[in-house]
Length: 112
Length: 112
Image (cartoon, rainbow over the protein chains, first blue to last red):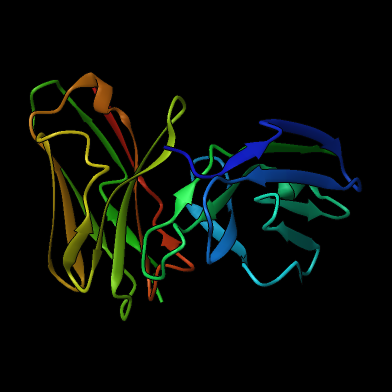
């Protein structure tokens, strides 16, 4: 069963615009991660935010975490055509050493 | 580092045949994960190993699926007999903990 659910399922924007994707989860977590998957490729880790953190930045990425609402958002600023991909949130099950559970992803299309 | 290596990259087989997928994790990683990705069900965890020991195989669909990890540098996922509904992309991932996972390129399996 899915722990994380991304919203929206699909997003189309123009280059230079910002893209925001949301993730909701069901149970308590130790950390939440975001991954990117380009078409036909494996997933690539983007960023990890711990349960005691509220916001984290990495380059053009900004992730927020609200544990009271069990939700997270990924913001990509000044998007580029190369950002076109599917984005997944992944959560653990609240226990260190357990596997991750991935949502179904948001498909982002950035047109030039 | 070569990253996670999977073989074959593509496999086309007929219903009833045995299929073996292979994975070489990143050297030094002690956790290995097998996932299956389909449009309908998204990315599903099948099984994962810590230090070559299967920890959670609750995601393995049925007895037709089996996975082994005879040593720290090799794992197999076997389907016997295969069925058309097994068609999917199978990913192997490895990590040093259950946090950041590094994915292989995947094996695209088609069962006719």
